[in-house]
Length: 442
Image (cartoon, rainbow, N blue to C red; front, top):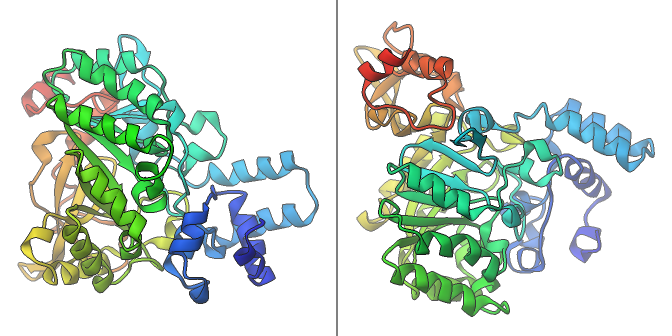
């Protein structure tokens, strides 16, 4: 590492960065280092935690295993082999991404697509499978560690068009990665323009999931193809399709630099909308005031707060996770402290295997303390917005930690979800909304 700020760190911290960085992806840039990290507050600075590997991101047995290999003077191949052994123990594809979300076209599996929810298809452009800098919590970390079988990636925009034609239920395409905004404009256009030129009356919204506005705002301000990117955005708006940038902002500081504010202004002037989302993360944004400030500043700049997520059960989750009750308390405290125009945000939400499950709160029903939950998205759309209850568990950090309340054997969706798994309806295809039709297929 040649960064002077890193060289000034104590030896134990630098060694921890080396150990963890050999297992989990690490990449930064001069904007993050010079504009976002407060080096006077390191190692406690939230952006240092957000971008630099930390000792406790690996559990002790994994850290010691990799540390011993490095100290032994092992070769690069031996270090990589050890890293891969650890990686496969970190749940690299949570929520059935690889097994259940990958769709087919004819008899061919679409390796660079996911279709978990009826209306929305995710597309992973092969040239967009990196980022301007990596978030240390990223649940898509397997995209960046050089193991091909853990990657989603796809080049063929024509297959995406054909898939949408064959699936009239699809209204939204989400370009994700990695970060699609890492691509040159002409490459990004090679994916987006075919969608505009095809006859796709069912396609209404094109989304781009990106951290570029927070980590590299120069992309739409001073980069060589910045103006070309904005013209592409304008082209989408002029076509009658809605363009939404799903902006990943984890801390108010990402919105406060002049270049970041100029990037937002330029994007919004194209007619594109910016919706914002982030997980709630220990060490980074685990208090109500940070979230209230984040949402307030976003609304001030014309952004739409969209999701507060619960950190996913993969990678370094144990370093960042927060009990569901605490996450709800933080959400509620922030929600109470902002005006109605910022209350578009939904959370805390778990992107679990059956769907996106929101924690509505902790309550007492018939003398039993319970979690109140609902689906914001489900593998079966009929599950959405149906409240259900789980036994109170102060240590729960994920849906799998919860059990049904009131003596029930299972949650209302469990039998149907099990049937989907058994007969393959959850494997890359949206499910039937009619339970009788589903039963008839079993």
